[in-house]
Image (cartoon, one colour):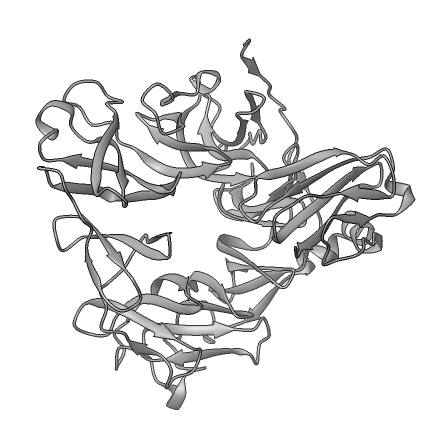
Length: 470
């Protein structure tokens, strides 16, 4: 098959929407002091995060409690301290939040080192579980897998009650580098060394099968004793992408199917991967600065989405979140080296705001994008952006009605959509169905779950949530 390189050197369009990005709450209410909200995680219609009210302006008795656990419902009055986990001004720094069996877990340091906590959103319901410190966790077959950094970087599993090393029937000992693990094809892939292989192959790509307890080398990417320096594991559809030797690689889980993406060989410094709509989005540099790129394996098309050039030539995209047919992210513009709010529909890049800087930790809750940002006067605080304020495509989306929803075998759409292209993606961002609307009735044949159906029309992109109940 002929390889195709497609480069859209799109202008970054800046909207005059500074007024649409609003501060949810000045948590550290003392001028430019930073609350530095971090590790934002959505759970049961609240955002949980770590924040530091060093001024004590929003903490009990006006005390400096350090960086502790906060939550927000998206309103100023509903943004509150949950609990001071480390008594005094020292920080517990809650991080690595995850939802497991409908319980919110996170790791924090209560004074004797990092341990696992769970919370129901109340002070009395936030407590250490007695479990281990878990970070960069991966869920597979209803178990949490993680790397135990205090036990030689071995692979552990957690079942909600206890944690233990995984079964290893081999003669070697695993040591996973940087907690780089991912679930793919019902197995766990890792960048690691295996003691019996390490002297001859170094640190490379391995797979662990929980059913057999076997660690297997997938490929010696950096042939010989050198290390391949793998990072950024990201699953898109039936492919696992990763960075190796400063380049874009992919694997289907076989030695033969593990290879560099040839059309992207001229792009180096690949980083900050994200899978959406059957496409991989990532940061990369073809010699003109770190820009936003996309690669679609199905068509073997590589696309350069941003082309920031000016006082600053690095776009540095990161911190992605998807909503209503757009991928929102943090990036730099040509005028400064600060991170601002951007979005892409997969073809063009648009800058949402120029006033708020230091944007990161993006999450979406109830149709609103939340993130850390700085307006230059109140320090790093919690901000929000309502995509509906962009009017054109959002208003058009709201005018489109589909029924029944929840649906089973089919949906009915307005006749004005006939002749337009549509696509349906699942919650992982993979395209499960696409085509053209040929009648008001669209047959589905989908598994139960939540999807996004999008219609490309002359009026813009219309996206709706679609629930399938069989």
